[in-house]
Amino acid sequence: MKIFDLHLDLEVYFRIPEFLNMRFDDFQKIDFLRHGDIPQFQKSGLKFAVANIFPFYYKNNTWESISYKEFLILLARFKDWIFSYDVFKPVMSKNDLINLLKDKNKIGIILGVEGLNFIDSPKRIENLYKLGIRCFGLNWNIDSVYSTSLKTNKKYGLSKEGIYLIKKLEDLNVVIDLAHSSSFTVKDIFRIYKKQAIFSHNGVKKIVNFEQNLNMETINKIKQKGGLIGLTMLPYSLSKKEKINIDNFKKQYLFLKEIAASNIAIGTDFFGFRFRQEINEGRNYLEFSNYLKKIKVDKYFPFYNAFNFFKKNL
Image (cartoon, rainbow, N blue to C red; front, side, top):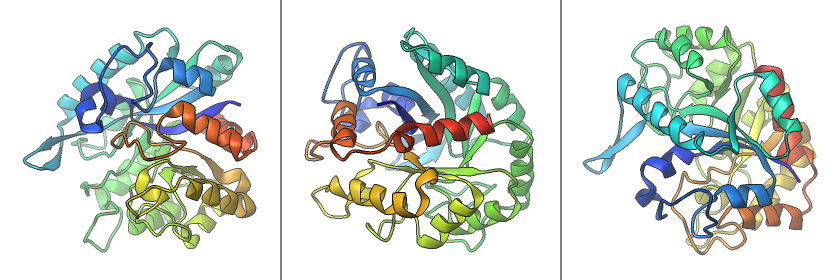
């Protein structure tokens, strides 16, 4: 089995592992008390992953946006770290995807960003593209001057500056991620954006009523537009109860397979939330990949749907 992960927060692990309840260590060592590492990825069949830069820092009991200059520093440091391991190779084009698929020993890394609050001008988009960013998450849980997030109290989606920013993104071979965007932003994107978008780490609200999980209106629109939903291991997407029920992942997969089989993929969000011992069969990447085999997912869900989507859009 091969896996294409739409959302892997490796930069968070690199920068603030203590927030994740994980110990930072050599990524070539296997450690089942963190969400993954090179041995686990290789045993699991991870082939491609969108690795996101998280452009926020924790201060005074709240998350605040970094500046554009600070983002460039984080990006450079993360690239130095991740690509110091020869197994990881950057993916910046369709040809990179195709060539890396042939190399059994390498894992392709697509650089992404989760939230655009740090961008002080839409003109920065072109420079970020030159630096290798290929997946642009419009929002995290904080509104930006460009668009509103899931946590918004506002009644609009894209601002005028946001519409201009979207047009800049539309001119490039990149992917837009709406995982944390408000329903207003999502509707605006569906209305004006001519390409396809992803929801990289979400679930199904009909099965688990969590704000980041998608309602049927959005799921049907994604299917109509040819977008992609990354089913996630984010605990709240699996259960709002104290004990996490990983079988809700299976329920969401089977539900979407029936109605939108070509529009579903995996977006674990591993390294994006605290390590929890009680998530039976999904505490780390190796357990998760074994769970996928146990529930007998088809090959399109963990890999080919996402691979074909990115091959078309990069």
